[in-house]
Image (cartoon, rainbow, N blue to C red; front, side):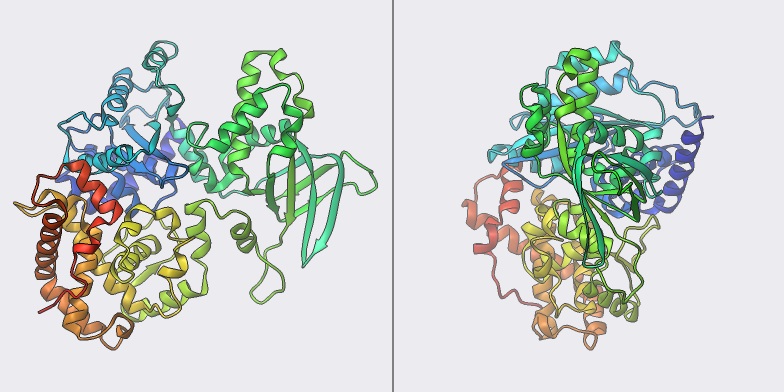
Amino acid sequence: MNINAGIIAQQVRGIAQRSRTALEKDLGPLDDTRARSVAFVLLCVKSMLALSEEEALQRLTEGGNDFGVDAIDVSDIADSEFVVTLFQGKYHHENLTGTRNFPQSGVEKTIQAVRLLFNPHQKLPVNPRLEARLEEIRSLILDGHLPRVRVLLCSNGASWKVPETQALIDAAAFGDRVTFQHVSHETLVRVLGSAQPINDSIQFNGKLLVEDVAYVRVLIGKVPIVEIARLMESHGDRLLDRNVRRYLGLTGNRVNRRIHATLQDEGERAYFFFYNNGITLVCERFDYNSLQPEHHKVLVSGLQIINGAQTSKTIELALRQLKDEGADALSGLEQAHVLVRLYQVPNRAPGEVGPDTQQITYATNNQNPVELRDLRSGDERQRRLEQGMRALGYEYRRQRSDAALTSRDISLAIAAEAVLAVWRERPQRAKFRGGDHFNAFYDEIFTEDLNAAQVVISVLLFRFAENKRKRPPAGAPEFIRYASYFVAMLMGRMLLADLGVERRAVDHRCFEKAHSLIGERAEIYFERAMEQITSALAQLYGGQDISAHRLAATFRRGDLFDYLDPSSQGA
């Protein structure tokens, strides 16, 4: 048995046990074998996208008529482009040697899926979960946004066969808009083990600038890109911590493609230093020979890249490709450098003077939505909400955890979605702008006057609406699969009307009454919300038939607001 394959097998069994109830709610009864297969997909999704198990569950699409697509993640729109990550999992239950190749049939299925799923005019017999995600993607395409597709073929074995199966991928001729990557048990173990400290040395060229600034020791200099590539090859995912899980590759980011193009161009390589913003690293300690005038080798302990993950990964990829092309392709690389800022930030006790690693990371690396959520979890507002929810009998999971969530647990990400949809009445932002929840929208969502009772109530309404989306009642209209955030908003209006208070007045004093009303009247609120949305759609489209593409676009853009009564009534 391969040791890492065994580690992943234990992880899979753990997820299958603690998430069995949630999985069976969505997929129906599962035997142990099927439960472990789905749990493996769940492990891949949560690991590669740095999500909680609850969030990873929302990405699952498997269940028959899924074209071999077991999970889908859709990024926010950037530069009129968005990234779609497709997961297909093949879990070997008995063979834990880690040597079985990813099956050619699985690759063939995925190639067919990419061809068909992204054609807005292709009608397909797919399961409801996949259809809802698919129509959202197609509505983005019809609105003029361009998809970039990252296919992650996951198994606890080896990659697909080369050249036989690789030839099929090459023959598909998708160009640079589609990339295929194998995620193995080795990949997953590296990602899961990324918290171990890294000790190494970094070769700088030229002179260094070293100063103590505000209780932080700072070193600035230029580093050959071949040294960055060496660090990445040596430490990989651990060096980038969770950043690597959001790496968009060359196909998912224009900046990455420009970096790659510069390094491929022999005449431009020497100017790379001027074209790039540089890389920021933190460490617990660095040392160097201060008597040496230049070209220092700097010893570092507890090293971590906190800004520049995309640059570092692209450098690694570009140099690997150049090496494959032969010695001539490497000409001039010794002249290519990148600016590096290295901060020595010791672990500070509470009350100690000086910024900590978290503060520096937030200030220098605020592009990554997953990192931002982690950084915001330590915010004083989040700590207050945690204390308040505990007093109400709920547990606030500010930080990601592998523990299964119960009905009394509320994750930070779900809290943000629920508050933005229900109380801020921005349902389209809550669903489609997740990357901004802990950046541009953070202060709008988590205002100073937001209290624990408001968060819990919004989450209860949101979960009720989401459960109806996942398991629609018999005869439910088609739009239910796209409207849950709007439904939750309308249910919130009705609850306030029954309470006879404004949102600002909702606190621990009326929590029990609100909680009881949700238990007694949630079904009524839901039915009335659906009636309001049905009426609004009829007004918006004049009673004509509405395609799934248009429905998805309608709820994404928020076209219904002008037709929804802002004074929705309760009982």
